[in-house]
Length: 223
Image (cartoon, rainbow, N blue to C red; front, side, top):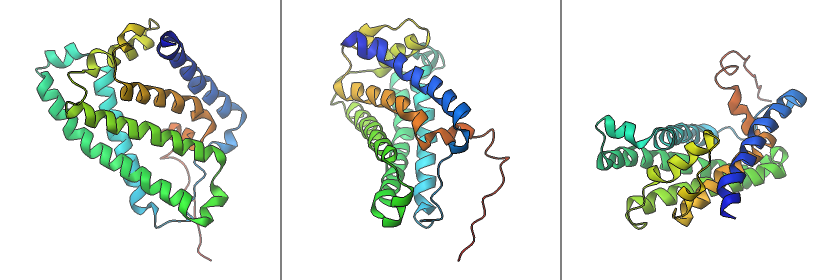
């Protein structure tokens, strides 16, 4: 099962993400959209949308630094382990608050307003469930690791090289053996997100920034 979860399943997720997205764009480009619901509930997006997207960009940046940049490079740049954790927390705490807070407001808007039902599909419910799983496990794992509850666990010596080994097509499953359960749940969450990505409204993010700034405005008129 360890070989499957950490050696095979990531490639299944990557395949769904890449091939599924390409197929959807080629066969169903007309539905390549976020299915905007701003005209149904505009005021609630005033804070929820910016909070969610800003938190998302900050979290993505933190993951890029922590996962894709090897530890020896940051050490060589004079950033020791203590300083790295201070920087990570300084960026991670506001990112988590914005990301989770924005997501909660979007989820409340999506499922508490009756008029939003017309623009909410079953796949939207699945998407919100998996995103909640991913964000909650990520925030909880970061909090537990920062407070020392997980001991001296260092994801830059386990999860980071494991993920890079996947990208090099030489998965080192042994690196995930002693990873705490909460981090493993977070890893499974991104795989689940990758699998459902082509079938959800998340595909609209791939239009940014290539088509986003060039498209015509959508004009709504009040009745």
